[in-house]
Length: 369
Image 1: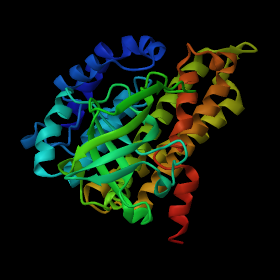
Image 2: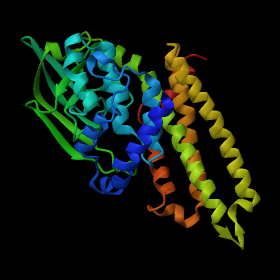
Image 3: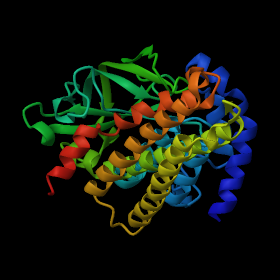
């Protein structure tokens, strides 16, 4: 079944995605119409149960879709946030009313989701956020600024991370479901980035946004616990895309060095080229086996926070290494944006930042030594 899904996704992307990537990179976002098409073809939230409009799949279906997007030459950030992250926050922590209200639209593409954690002065240290949610009658009033928000310009639904008790550190954080059309929600700049230029990344502002208590996700003060519980899946999702990107960089470089000549012979015939590629291929193959095993552990509910930190740390570092070495083998062409390796290089760098920086991941791992 996974093989059939992969073939179907590949055909859809070749037809509806790949021909438009250059235009979307210039415009700085993927249009909403694409997400409706993706929903029609079953590419959104595949692990959502049938009772909420989904296909009733599992995380392996998400992985297949993400890998095929990567093999189109683009990191699947928008889909990961929507399908791998927000959908599972709702599935695991949402009320029945919340699930029935939002998940069917997320599956169909009528609702595009985002999660607003990062702030101008708070990134990996979520306990330092300043966004506040103060009780007001039977609801909350949210104020704050968020940045680096994937899907920020196009989203309809936002999970907002805010402080309900500023003195309680992690125990004072709560999550809220906020509609982007609500009064007081403002979209700021669509941010210009080094890579992933087709991804919609934005600022969001919340000015006295009134949300009913029924839009709180989980219990008050439970936000940090929810965030920490969902991070392993998010980090594994990033790890799977990292390996797929490394595989793509290696594949296109192997093709390149077999045809590109220097001093009268193909680059692959130089020992330095062959040895470098041999080393990279061995490392990428080992990473593939490792990540597939991690996916199996997640399916068996044995995947831990440390597993997630280790998986993301090693695979995203490898992704950056492979992209760098492969770009070098392209010579001057590797610096040209028209060559895919150039995009793979610039896109790779953020993988070691979002979802937990290398330094945060090392901290998580070191605490168990």
